[in-house]
Length: 141
Image (cartoon, rainbow, N blue to C red; front, side):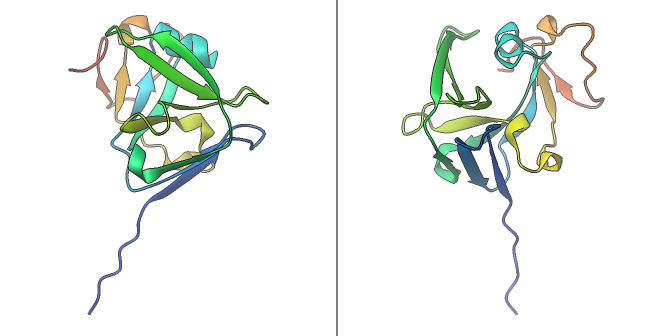
């Protein structure tokens, strides 16, 4: 008797819908980043994120690419919609092996299941994170 498998499917996009993404399979990781760069990019106390291999992610629409230095000395690339300004994903399409999808862009917010919190050293006191997360003062090794 054949077995039925259900493949996880995720989808989302920006506020106006000009930039859309979809991914299949479970995320590699999910969590919150409280670093100063993510806080400033989002206008919030953190960025909720999910990581997927680039091979399972499809992105449509043109993006505004914003580059900034990273904690480890590289360059971070954040992609936002040039029309509405919605922050959608990180990484360069066709170049990077994985993409960080910003969980706030999910069509179904219930699909976000964080397991970690990064850069607690930068977390504002007014940010309350869920209990039970693996926590890191900066980036995990």
